[in-house]
Amino acid sequence: MLLCLLAELALEFRVFQPLAAVTPSGVEVDVDRLSQGAADQLWLALRLASVKEAVAGGTSLPFIADALMVNYDDGRAAVGFEVLSKDEALR
Image (tube, rainbow, N blue to C red):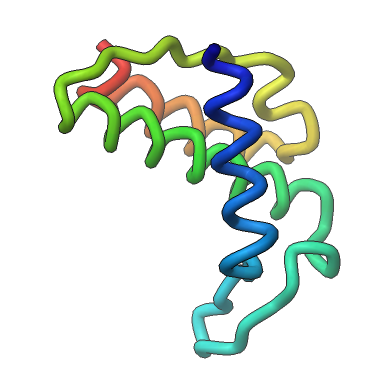
């Protein structure tokens, strides 16, 4: 069920709203052009946003951290773990 929900969500992003990252200067970058580490950061942000949205709506979702930061450098991994440890939706 959860996998179907996530697949539908991913499909909606691809079909109805192309996913792009926005640089600090406001330039949109297609996800396909991101480095693997940057794409992983975007994926983490989307996963966190979906959990927060579900929790706000009264639904509890599991947060699965599978190879979550494998492509992060040490600095980004440290920040990522700090964000995860402080996120109320994950408690």
